[in-house]
Length: 261
Image (tube, rainbow, N blue to C red):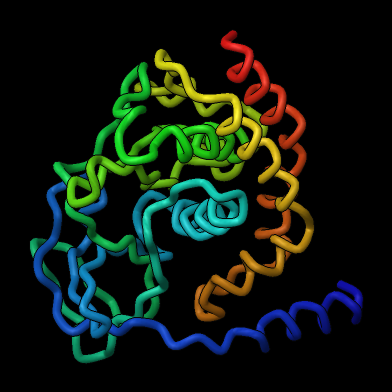
């Protein structure tokens, strides 16, 4: 590693001056595959946590952060999230789930009917401005090679759509970060179909928003990760570079949708 790279990594880490929400209590462990804890933090929000050492592999938690940052940059509706701190005094075991102190990815809990695995067709297209959100969502799925696509619909806001659970994106199912390859995920291996019309200007805005995805996003994504996780800048850079490499393809897909093909 060159001295220039060392300076660059340290300068990136020096920019991490964020105050993270701190967990006040652990409510319960959810009965899903990784048994994620549901917690309440001192910012008055509830979060579902994913840890860097979870059983699905460290890359799934890194994916959550990087995909969320990319989504925010291109205006895609990723669910509200934060890095959340679990204090030492909350170390415990709940239903065989070990809660360790440190930092975790926290997906903020919204008022929903639950997670929707979407199926083969995009639903609730014409509810609460989703026509302005779905084109960016489709772009994000393609940019990040989304697998196991899941969304939630905020029922407090007339079914406003948000993307959640990006763990198996970037080709991370089976093996870590196979990037360009299909994951072989058995449930959903293709982007759901859009069967309702969306106005041309919505597609145009989504296409224009992809111009914001450039090399500057590497530093943004790296800065969003806790230094305690020990994630290398080169790991983050490879994920962002992969998404950037797919911009042209994503634009082509959005244009085909605009033409109704």
